[in-house]
Image 1 (cartoon, rainbow, N blue to C red):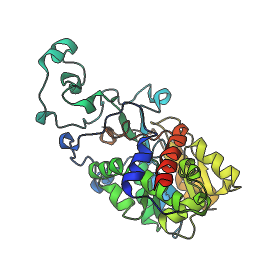
Image 2 (cartoon, helix red, strand yellow):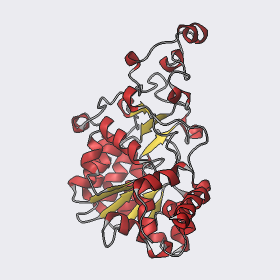
Image 3 (cartoon, helix red, strand yellow):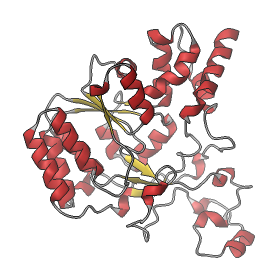
Image 4 (cartoon, rainbow, N blue to C red):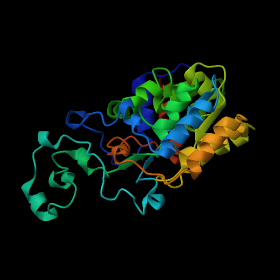
Length: 332
């Protein structure tokens, strides 16, 4: 089956996004970097522990990470775990260059001054402000852990059903991501769908690819990254866990329930990887992180995520992806 061009992939993926969502107008985005490698120099004991665990996990390992609810949480999907909120006085960095917008005085009078600034600007003038405001927060210790893995010689990959545009935005705001997951090491929804359409199991029927890319199966990831094998995929998705179980590949995925976005999930991931890789040194470092004191989420790791909602790909709507692909391939 020939791989469709990017415009068709975009059309297919748009079919499974939230109804009524408005795409981001990047002319009004604030793209100021929020954190760089220099921020790792002022690490807490927890971060020191998970970074050392990463270093000790072993050179030559290939580890694939999911993004949302694995490395990064949002108050859109983690509502139950978001509160009580230890950073309630640090609501997060705004995404928009409000100085480039025209304030609506009537909305300001009606909503008052205590609401976020976006409520002073009209969605009629700036339709993208009508999307829900989504706050995102990197899990405590995630940058330290990933940096430790890289320092220890592991190859890191990212496989996410998020859109390329959102990943580019995250890389602009958090430049460290581009070093951790360089070109060829990050596969977004468009890349996974293209790989699914290339795969043998999707040759016969475009409907297969409609749901196939959500499962991030071993064959799909090997094709997407151009690698022969990887050690494990770390992912929160029950959909992915079921896909691997159906293939008898449970040992190739580490299922991480979303849980508490403010807690010690990164150290628990490190501990489980240490167990799987039979690394006593890494297990000891992960244990020290888990018992070494309070986990402190960092305010600099919290930000408004303007791309999350308008580029959300809903797994339950994969049949819509399939329909677009079938229609286009049939007519083409």
